[in-house]
Amino acid sequence: MPGALIRISLIIVRRCIRHTMASEFTAKQGQYLAFIYYFTKIHGHPPAESDMQRYFNVSPPSVHQMIVNLEKHRFIERIPGQARSIRLALTRDQLPDLE
Image (tube, rainbow, N blue to C red; front, side, top):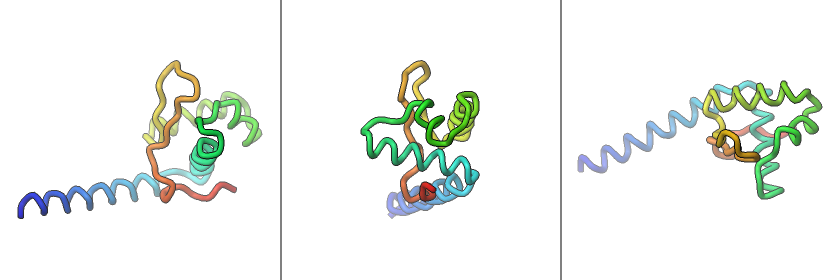
């Protein structure tokens, strides 16, 4: 019985963490996260920063700063020095629709 209680507690904690994470990103961050999700789904690999630059029509430093901030808030994970290594730390259900 104690094992079942622990499992239920873990499930509740995980759901709370996911809900909290999903509600903490800004609208703009949400659009970048949705873009990363759909680009990866369509192309089979994550986007490069230049792909995001073209889509959002912003400068390279703007895209890079957004990626750094998304990683800092743990919405994404990257492997330093490896191209196209962005991985979402959120599920599709936690993301907004891409506008």
